[in-house]
Length: 347
Ligand code: SF4
Ligand code: SF4
Image (cartoon, rainbow, N blue to C red; front, top):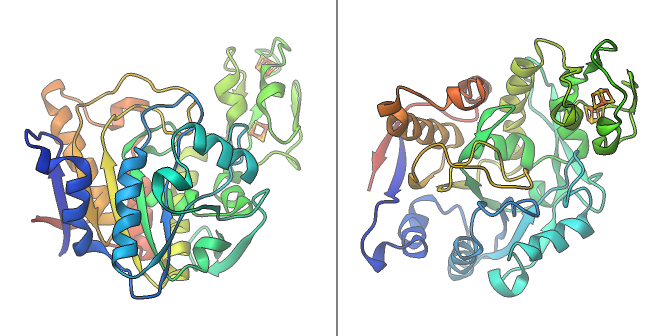
């Protein structure tokens, strides 16, 4: 059974602070060999989001990778939605605003999928929904990787952790489109008041209300979030299909790196929305702590179990946050061979 290391957020001593906890867990999950070029995958948070993983946690991992003989770089990929990560130049500028710089982390930031997200490597995964997926090149070409994920809610997948970080955050633009394209929405002309809010947020110029040009749309659904009239409607089976694709796509980076990946789930500041939101909402459960392991399915299963355990007194689970069952993408990841849900806590 996979071992997951857990360090509780309930601490009272300085020797248990987050950098110290990361130092204790690192030897159990480090895939780093002498001379490895090591990707450290993070999400630096949108501008306005203040609950993303903290730079000092990343700095600690960087220093540990160097100590282990690796050559670290901190990495992220561009997005499909409009925001500070739509291209590599804005991503690096936005990351600096949130405190992620070469100076603060002791490693350079490399945007893994190039200037506009077009730099990827196709990996065959033979899934039920996806035969192949394109992984961001700098990640696919690294020798090993540490994925540092902020455990939190997510409107599309219910929860965002290690599996979502692999199956979305490690892909290039074409890969992200493959996961999202099942969501291409349409507009209900009877509800649409022609306000134009959806046109503003659409990164791909796909909307002329009440029409959406599906040859331009990638299905990322910023428009549906922006429409106050609830006039933008994705296909009814889109949420489940998207989660299944997400879980399958997670195998891409694992295959590209031949499994040489360690996972850290930083489970503090559990906001309903993900770090791509340009604000931080009220948290829905108390801080949990830091989890670490070598299996993305097991670490997410353990994280979800801990979250649900701490929500129990309110007779709630994470499924209540968005009305979305996050186990759909975790189970799809298990089914395609990313890992196993069964785990035991150790150390
Ligand atoms: S945001 Fe909604 S109401 Fe406004 S133009 Fe778009 S579809 Fe119509
Ligand atoms: S039409 Fe909507 S879902 Fe499609 S790309 Fe534009 S904002 Fe995204």
